[in-house]
Image (tube, rainbow, N blue to C red; front, side, top):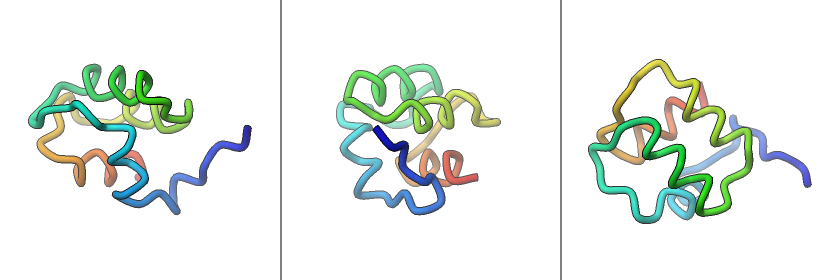
Length: 67
């Protein structure tokens, strides 16, 4: 399976992986939820490697993952 290019990731794609997350949310909660929803590993890793420990919105997650 090809991993998606994170630079081309959009909020619509990310929303499907973040279903069930209530923001604000801790980084590990967001990453675990994304993993459970079938997010590709590079997206899960991007969340886990983000500088912040908490996300206030899906848009913040998107910006962190895209870098």
